[in-house]
Image 1 (cartoon, rainbow, N blue to C red):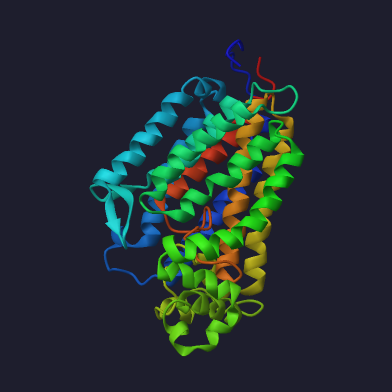
Image 2 (cartoon, one colour):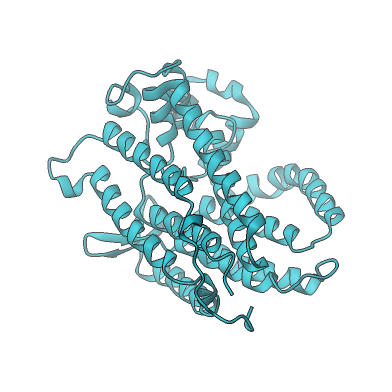
Length: 380
């Protein structure tokens, strides 16, 4: 990579407008549902939907900046990007704004930044830079350990916030990039089987009695033992979010109740409806048809990105794109599982749709990188 001559060769006909259109469609749908589900404050610049539009504007500016910058030049600045993301994660622990027991945001006047979202970009870039030159044979354990360390440091800082959901999103990215870099498939299978065996023992013998908080235990128990929902006290407390989400999804039917006509969010029954449970709002107001349409858009983004990765001119570009695709896939699967009650609630949002300026910004940067790599696949 270092020996490549950085000469611009851009074929603008390779600009993937459909990928950008799919992403903008999801953001638009998300903004509509945020507007629909969240009562107005009476001051437009304080409304969540308006803030989401501002975030989109910032994200589009970042997208254009990324597109106009040869991604091979970004390659040389990746160590600084990684260190900068770590400094932001440390800063949020010291100066961060605490909400519901978590220090996730740094406030800058009327705006705020969530460093964990930007750390996802930094980790994808850093892992791709480190793993891309390693081409021959099985990946040595030394390199596996270094890749794990690159991921573990920001994960640890995010866990201190504490934000378990955001921290978990780094694991599938690491696993996918290790696999694509030659990590022995047999070892991956052995590790997966071991994890399946060890996880229940760890949960019952270590996590449940010594580490997890009561509400975290009950969220997991709700998935293991659905009969808990028969208990009125459980439905009012630990199972409340899951129950209200399932009600919202079920009440949407085939075509939904219509925008601004969903009762679960409009009347305040569904907590966190504009963030973690935006998919519940969508299902209630746009029904099965709207939900399937959104899932197809995500499927398009993931498969389109994989196709671009196959055509990338270098391994670094390929790994960056696959890291993005893996991140989106994990977010969607876990969030939808939470929404329909198949997985515990762990605070993982729906990318591009959930409210959050930092999330929109990071997604637009990553999509910019994907399209950037495709534009320069014939670069000299």
